[in-house]
Length: 124
Picture 1: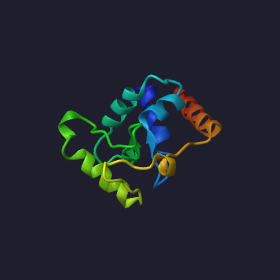
Picture 2: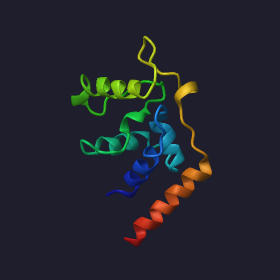
Picture 3: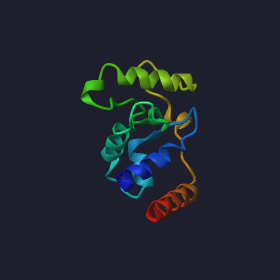
Picture 4: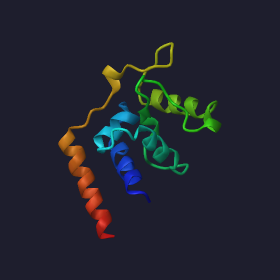
């Protein structure tokens, strides 16, 4: 598996219930500030039934982005339903309040966790 994808999954797995992160925010925290789309590609590669909470990643406007062109009708509805089950509220325009729901992990904890994960990968 692509190491960047592994780092994306490790970070997304830490997002608490009822909180979200943006694609761009994840890219910045992983040291690749121009890789927001790559974060989306990584999440799109998750197999059905994955335990990674992909639904907790949204765009910078606080809206849901379809995971692929084929998912335009169904995926956003599923993602919204999953987020609403976690207590997240959307406005009439389909946005959530980033000031309320955005998760900003302590930088040191995120970096330390990712370094540990990367070191474990290199030992395999």
